[in-house]
Image (tube, rainbow, N blue to C red):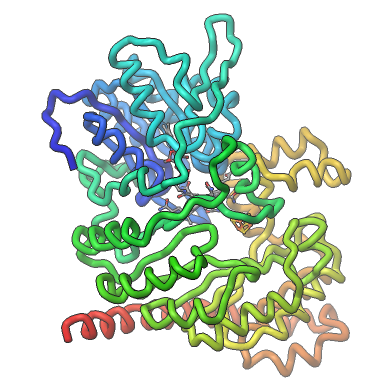
Length: 508
Ligand code: B12
Ligand code: SF4
């Protein structure tokens, strides 16, 4: 890591609701490599249920950081649309605190540059920023022409938006470097406090990605549209070398003293045969930490899982989304069959992976009661044990399902705009909320409760007409929710135990 004197030009980066923000950590490494000092502000903590809006005091801390840094630019990482209220307030605060231009990047900014420019950002840089952000910083610092920097969007004096072609990307993602694990100069702003230092260092779980991109086309996810924006020749899925991933994890273990486990947050964990073989050897030699992966029914492979399990894989998280083939195929654009789903779950069990968590998105406007019943009957066939995560559907800007809902008359463009850009609390509320008929609520509860064996005989007895057993079903549901909380503690306990066992193995 290059050492910087206090006089090195400074860039302020802001990550929202994510103190591990990988994108920002990669950018910090690239900027430092190019000779910049970076002050990263981890602005508020991650909370997938109830993130809190920002306060005036928190904004004042941000202004203070920007003023003191006197930066070349302030970079905001706008990954998700779900926090836009806070992003806009921070944008205003940064512009208020210093004359430095504000540059936005990240998945949302990549898809909707004009929104951020209209809201006052000076620039947007689309897609990967490791090459382009240092180029822009150099141009701004030296007062040279920025107009040919790839991926750059800005407003001309006449208000016209100019967007250069996306560029500065590489298939050799190792060349993006390693994300900064100890962000020197970082601070964490949350709960009306500002704490200096990198909040990640005290973490028990390290988050890593071994690849960028996803080969699938799910209609409720932005990945397909982010892929459509990639320039010709840039692959939809770009995988790092095993060496690069292991080097990062070795460093993470060295820096984060309390580490218990690793989350691989690849959209789909790489299943390239040679890659996995090399990975398991190196992981076993050097890491010794339990880990979790995300996968997909079409990508799960028994032999691969067995190898990963042998070196610490404890959980596979996989989207099923619906038990109705119609909903999966026609609405979600997921083309796996019932048999492929069941085979994938059986493979997870047969490989002996401790935990399988399966996501379902239920009670959305495209779903009928029959679809919901099909989800119940599919779940009934899952080999136990497993965990179900039941979600609602969030309409996210930049996803194909938005136009589908409008085309099918389920929503108007105006209504959709209101839903997608609603205040943060409303969006997060909607994600978990179930607003549905009694019959829908009954089947939802049947699905949820089925994951616990003790309710199954009763549920089978209610299948003909669950609504007439609503009271008993509610009681089971309340009990099942409590059991889920206990199960969560059991799962965490297992991971800690596994980590201890793996640590002992290392010292032999
Ligand atoms: C991994 C991941 C997560 C991880 C993040 C782990 C971590 N430590 O960062 C977890 C599981 C925590 C997560 C959480 C959420 N996620 Co997420 N996540 C992803 C995923 C799959 C990959 C992101 C990633 O790490 N990519 C690798 C890094 C290196 O790339 P990057 O972040 O894009 O950053 C690069 C560029 O964008 C750019 N860049 C980034 N910031 C900036 C800033 C500037 C100034 C510049 C110039 C450039 C720049 O340069 C970076 C380096 O190349 C994306 C899908 C995708 N393809 O983007 C969804 C995605 C971003 N997530 C999404 C969502 C919705 C969420 C949640 C809101 C879910 C929830 N309900 O809680 C939260 C919000 C988190 C947050 N605070 O922003 C959506 C956002 C869509 C939208 N319109 O909102 C996406 C697009 C997936 C989807 N469903 O479509 N997520
Ligand atoms: S498999 Fe996951 S990451 Fe890939 S497109 Fe579907 S939802 Fe998005």
